Amino acid sequence: MKQTLTGMVLLLALAVILPAPLHAASLPEFTGLVKELSPTVVNITTRRRARSALPREEMPEMLRRFFEAPPRQGPAAASGFIISEDGYIVTNFHVIDGAEEIVVALADRRERVAEVVGTDKLSDLAVLKIEADDLPTVRFGSSDALAVGEWVLAIGSPFGFEHSVTVGIVSAKGRSLPEGNGNYVPYIQTDVAINPGNSGGPLFDLEGRVVGINSQIVTRSGGFMGLSFAIPGDVAQEVIAQLKDTGRVDRGWLGVLIQRVDRDLAESFGLDRPSGALVTQVFPDSPAARGGVREGDIITEFNGHKIDLSSDLPHVVGRTLAETEVELVVVRNGKKRRLDVQVGTLDEEDLAAAPGFSPSRDTTNRLNVGAKDIPRGRLEELGVKGGVLVERVGPGAAREAGIETGDVITMINNEWIDSLADFEARVEALPAERALPVRVVRRGRPVFLVIKIED
Image (cartoon, rainbow, N blue to C red; front, side):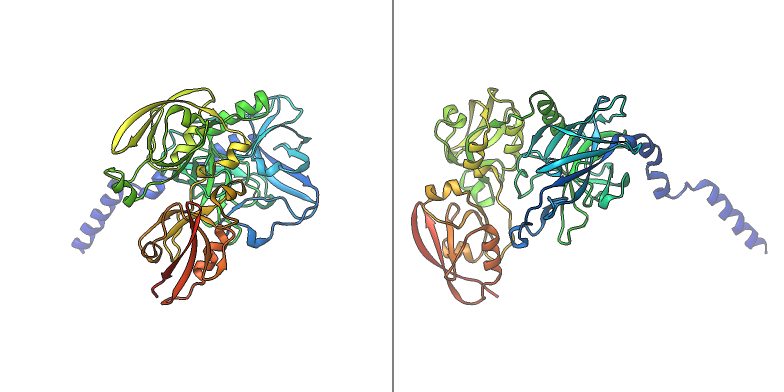
């Protein structure tokens, strides 16, 4: 009996001394933030003209907008947030693209018809204006200072459920996405639950500051699967300021095509590790050409910013004001060089002519080939009517067959290739353990090679 009592005393003593469970003590409190921030978030409803839906086979399998314009006339719901007391509101470009009417519903149930102040497709941002006064507004924080693993909170209208709150952490920063504007926005990746209707809504940090604007998800089902992407707040503030002032956005332009530097390329160029952006083409009379950049240069630094991945370069170039004098560090013939370049202005023609600013999709297909679509404006230049441009050849059947970076694959197993999606589908269907013909165009001359995929 005495031993039992002694044991009970020890247990009680331990219960007093030991702290509360770690998970209970470490979780943040969100209720105060939600109460403070919810009035700054609005619900946006748009009406569009009827139009046919994009065929499913033409849509990227993994990456889709939260809310594409519906194929029939009717309301579409999304989110936004108030940035000024007199009624300026921010949302995504794809939310209001093609809208005939935009209605903003405030937290107090008032509704106002909004006018478009300015839009920017490349950053997927739009600024709206409603007639109102004394509105609650958000504060912006620094997305550059945001740390991976940090808590973040989203408020929006998923599936039309207004002012829904979801929380999570920052999973990664500086993500490039293989679609449209993906190369001009260094996306914040989070695991915050985001669904159709969250588009254009704010991503807050624990100080209640906007650090991102929810824009895209990666999904196989059309709903949330643990990967959501937000436009960084620092990028958004630069775009918003220009849209409010002029209704448009000016971006920097170098005038180069670039590609990823893999281990083999790094070794061949005398680098100690894969890094930088390899210049595969310099456009005539471009800022890069005037600054002395050459094909074969590897850009490792842009105006003090380290270029570790090729996808880093478009991010920093696009955020640079036109006519700005910058210093490039390039590796040429194994030696570092410093070049002074005056950045130009990106326009629609430059964008169409500069596919190198769109990073190739780093595929894991059976050929171990990284490839990308060819803009129509470059087909004649490359001497082809269709196909995909090879940007990376990893170990495997393609490399053994002699396929090289820069080749245009136009036919596989006697079937023509029209697009990247077509290429990947045909590669997946190739039979194993058979010699198969592949037609490539290399420096304007067609040649057939033979590949054999092991089972």
